[in-house]
Image (cartoon, rainbow, N blue to C red; front, side):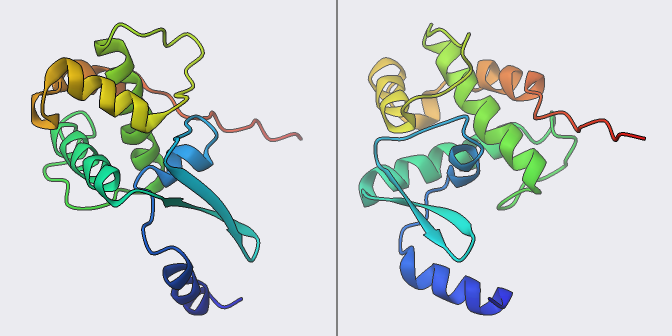
Length: 151
């Protein structure tokens, strides 16, 4: 499938793309409001609830902008390159778990929506989340290490 055709079809199928799709597809996170689908040989993730989708968008935008210094970027506008995006998404959600006093031993976030709802009930609005704690986790997050090539 040609890339332009893929993107067009993806947009038609996935009207409400999950903003944490990279984290979910990396198998480090899950969400009760997400629905996986396959298109050609790729996986996509859709959000089932527009109101919750907006909360996730708001959180991700704030995590990106607060993490600009730790990402060594002057300004963050929109999606980041893949590795940095994973670092913000997974590291940021792990930081939110830490701020809520949850166990991050397994490092897997079982329900992104549930985590955000719990944080909202604890801290109030998303703007009030403890971003310094979240940014520490983003800075510490290490993605998958590259495999050593065999010779």
